[in-house]
Image 1 (tube, protein in one colour):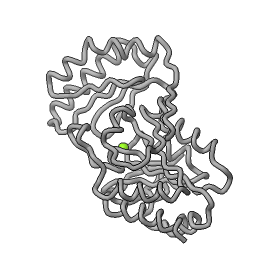
Image 2 (image 1 turned 180 degrees about the vertical axis):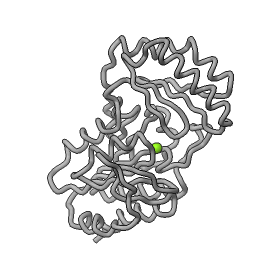
Image 3 (image 1 turned 135 degrees about the vertical axis):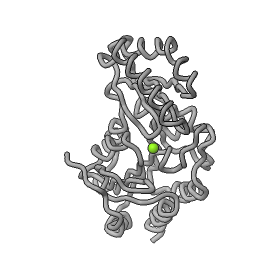
Image 4 (image 1 turned 60 degrees about the horizontal axis):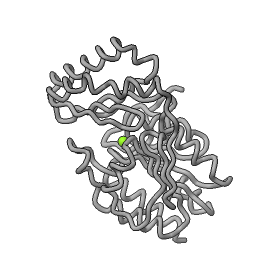
Amino acid sequence: MAQTIPRQDGFEEFFRALRAARESALLLDYDGTLAPFRIDPGTALPYPGVCEQLNRIMRQGRTRVVLVTGRWIKDLLPLLDLDCMPEIWGSHGWEHLRPDGEYRTSTIREETLRPLLDADSWTGRIEAVGGRCEHKPAALAIHWRGLSPERVTVIRDIVREQWLWQRMDEHLVWHDFDGGIELRAPDTNKAHAVEAVLRELGVGTAVAYLGDDETDEDAFCALRGRGLGVLVRPAPRPSGADLWLQPPHELLQFLQQWHNAHEV
Ligand SMILES: [Mg+2]
């Protein structure tokens, strides 16, 4: 599908439909969407006002709020200051936590798991030049945010060398993201989470997905024809999203309008 630059106007039509809808679902990426990037992801708290807006929306009881993140869910929970537990899909759709606490993960094949476990034999070289390696249930993320272009090149070369040497492409998928590389089990992406949520929604439910990164393109694609895809970034880029907004001001406006639409 050809990608185009999403527009910055056209939200009115969606909010008209939201006002008319009995139910709604608001799917949200976390890093770069609800929270600014930080070199230490453990300090990436949501933009001021975001949790308050989400609390107000959830209190209304008319919106299924779903966080869809590449993070391990256990790493996201300490950053959220929410009155109620939202639904969370973590590790790019590999794990699922419902508001009632029910937690499920997908299975992972042994041949997929092996190169992820064996990565300890080479990730020290990345950490030696300042990179950060994050082990997740079904992926290895290599972060270089804040490093010089020269160091990023060194890290990328190490990953590529290991990728080829160990023939990881037979079992894993390479994903570039904003600030690093993720080597991930196949069939694990945010479209999986979006499709699972869509299957449970009634006809006429108004749906939107907000995301910033390349990993959100799978979600935008899965939502096409069923809901509104919103790219959340300081500047637009080619995307499968329908519309674009700039965080944090326009994000807060969007959440406020979402709340207002269910007040009438
Ligand atoms: Mg993101």
